[in-house]
Length: 234
Image (cartoon, rainbow, N blue to C red; front, side, top):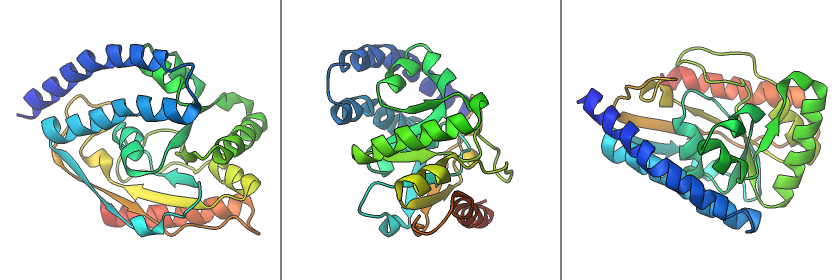
């Protein structure tokens, strides 16, 4: 059944993604927020398919911790599931991502129209400055900013060094940091065709105010909370 469900899910993605990409391109003249709401419908559809076809459900803990103003989300990154499910769970958002993702046919085209903060990681400090500059603009436009500080997907139970980009943005913009832990990788493994049914737990921590805190302190506080929660979730 896992093979059958995974194959049906992959087939459904092949069917819905190209026409939705054409729809996304047609939103080019529209305001950013309206473009986002239309294009993010694809993510809502994929998450729905994951629930109905694959049996991947989810629950959210700590939703009351979300601040009333746009914030920087620092989250664990284990699979493709959270990149789409966050658009269902959290307010309108943009992602900090590597620019190469925008070159992927269909998927990348729609992604480019969602106002992401695409960076060249090889540029070091210049990339951090770009995150701060464009991230501040997005926050002022009413978007939240999602950052996966480890920079790539990691397997459940593993960890990589937390990079400073998201905390740098929060400190520069005076925006709160919202740490997020989850266990999506248990059900939608990294780069895996086969998915397994289950309930993903998305745990939202208390927001961390950026006032009087430097980027490293913000980053360390978020990392400590996220990694402690990961132990319990796994």
